[in-house]
Length: 92
Image (cartoon, rainbow, N blue to C red):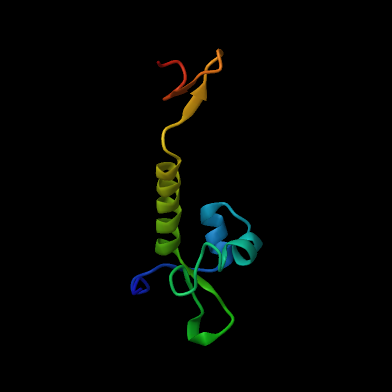
């Protein structure tokens, strides 16, 4: 994936400020499970330092939310009588 040209490179601390996570959560929980090497982050010159690609991370955050909402389908509510109905509460 050639997203790297023109990308904004961020350290874990800088990324944490933007997405409101702690840097250790990004490095220990998100990296390699949600954030993938070569897509969301690079190791410049094959070294240990990790730089995150802001545009790719932002795209995944936004698309992930849309995919989750689409997979969930319509919201089902249970009325007081115990019957299920679709749609927002108060509408029949």
